Each structure stands twice: as structure tokens, then as C-alpha cells.
Image (tube, rainbow over all chains, first blue to last red; front, side, top):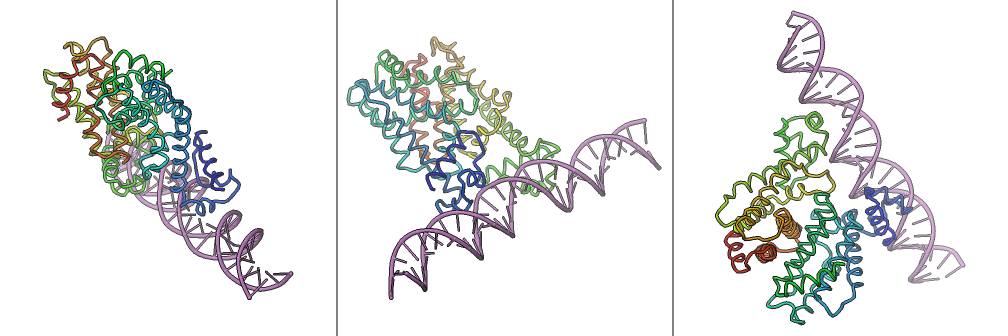
Length: 192
Length: 192
DNA sequence: CAGTGTGGCATAACGCTGCTATACATTGCG
DNA sequence: CGCAATGTATAGCAGCGTTATGCCACACTG
């Protein structure tokens, strides 16, 4: 029942339908009370939906196999992240809805941890110098997040991703110590 | 009446009060119908509020005086942009609310134009090479936007701005052709 | 095996939301 | 002065999230 409600809510979210309590209960074939027994009302359900969104994101990032080029891996992780957000924009927006509580630290941290790990490998491989892997990951994440939200909102066209993400990643990774030319090639390879 | 409604809505937004039709009408001292005669319901009012938000942002950016160091100016514009967003986070979030229509192209374009102009001056001054000023401005905007939203949402602490914005701007401007050392100094001076 | 709780769902109602139809007032113009 | 028109007040509607209450079906227990 819990999972049915979460999945139905996520489905309505990706279908651009308004996720309302009554419509949700009707679609699942139960009554509105189910949301109150299994969650703490709609806010609790939204929290569960966002947690599910982060879990899906973490799974998707985990599917990106690590290669011997950690900078390429960072770009590939960015591509997987962007693809996930573009395919389910409403879910992505709900995951970062500022009106709600903080996203679940565990599931969100799992996704972020994959990025930090890749940055750490770049540091160990000598591609980065004198930087905190978490800082590099945060900068990549924030840049991509902002660009994605602007694209999802329709402020920027979708082509803006292909135009600006590789440029931003190359700038960030070069500033972290990677050789600019080699970095650009790795980013191109990873962004695909 | 129009302006009174817009300003009251903006005031309730910064006061973290829920902006509801009845509460808004009561505070302004009129009836709910006023919102329908002057705007097209609440959606129209939200559009006007966002337009007002972009107008305030454009005014604030225009107050940043241009110096003989265009890269410093870009960082100073970023600082003014960030300060405006941090001071009125609810209004900033409303400005980019993806559920609504696109922000008013005129007022939003005015704010963005200031950034593009500064990037153009950097190009003319020889600080940037072989780049589109609009592309540099877009990358700076998207990076700052993403970082600001993460801070406003509480995902990142406020100190993350001072830690990551100068690093990101230096990375972007260096990738645009500026000398890294000189760029870092200009960004530090502008970010203040 | 019958009795008894107990957890989970259906029903109905409450207060709130945005919105609209209608009646009234007030202003400007011929 | 009377008429037209614009903007506001009132009342009500459908929808929302939430909650109080009743029921039922399952599980544990003497």
C-alpha cells in the first residue's frame, strides 16, 4: 500500500497531472485515509516521493561504470544526472522543492557520494591538485542543478545543456588542476 | 490598487506568510474581486509579482557601478545578485517558479543584459578571448542560480556561497581566456 | 474454538482555497 | 440631471487537505 501510493504519486507527477489527495486515493483504489495511516498526510507523502526520486537518481548514477579516466567518469555522471532530470522534470523539481523539509540525507547523500568518490579518484590519479573532492563535486552539482532548472523552467532551451555543461565542467575541472586540453577531451568523452 | 496588491503580495512573500487571495484582499482593504479586475486571478497576480521581482533585481544590478576592471564588475554583479536572492528568498523562488509561465522577457532580459554587457566589456578589454559574452553570462548565471537555490533550500549552508562562488567565477572566467591569477584577484575584489 | 482487541480503511463533515455570478456604488460624460 | 460604465462588495460553488467516527477483518488469547 505504501509503495503503491508512492509509485502512483510519482507516476502522476511524471504525467504532469496534479497530485491531489483524492485523485491519488481513487487511482490506487483506496480512500484518502490511507495516506494518513501510512504517511503523515500529504507532506509526509511528498517526503517519501522525494526520497524515492533520490533513490532512483542514486541507482542511475551507480549504473555509470567507472573507467580508468576519472574525469571522464565525472562528466558521465553529469550526463546521467541530467538525463534523469530531463526525463522526469516534475519529479526532479519536487526533489528540490524548497517549501518542504530537507531531502532525506541518506538517499540524497548516496547520490552525492558517487560524485565525491569520482572526484576523489581524479585526485588520487593526479588529475586534480590541492582541492577538496567534495568541493569539486559541489561545484559541479550546483552548476548542473542551476542549468537544469533553467532548462526545465523553459528559460533556456534544451540545447543549452549541450552548449554549457561541457564548458562548465571543463572550467571547473581545469581550475581543480587538470590539464585543460586533456580535461576537455575527457569531458567530451564522458558527456557523450 | 494594482501596485498596492503587488506590493502587499511581495511583502507577504518576504514575511513568509502564505499569499492567499482572501488574506491579500483583507490586508489591502478591498475584496477578492480586485484581484480579478486588475489581474487575471491569482496566476496573473503571481506573474505581476515575478515581474516586480525581476524589476527590483534589474535595479539592484544597475546600481553596481562599472569600473575599469570588467571581470571585477562581473563578480560584483554576482554579489549583488546573490545578496538580493538571500535577502528575499521566497521572492527569488517565486521568480523562477517553473509551474508558472516564463518570466516576463523584458524585465528578466534587462537584468540578464547587464551581465552580458559586463562580459562584453571584458571581451573588448582583452580579458576574454574567443567566447560569446552571452555564453559566459549564462554560465555564470546558471552556476550562481543553482548554488543559491541549494542554499535557499537549506541543502547547503550559507557559507557555501563564499566558498564556491568565487571559485566558480574564477573557473568560468579563466576558461573564457582571462589570466588565472589576475582573474582570481578581480573576482576577490568584486565579490567583496 | 469462541471472544476480544487492534490496526487499517470507508464515510462524512469541517475549514480553507481560488473562482464566479450577481447586485450595488461611484465616477465621468453627454 | 440622467445615463452609462467601471470597479467593488456579497454570497455561493467546487475543490483541496484534514480529521472524527464507525466498521470490518484479522490475530492473539483463555
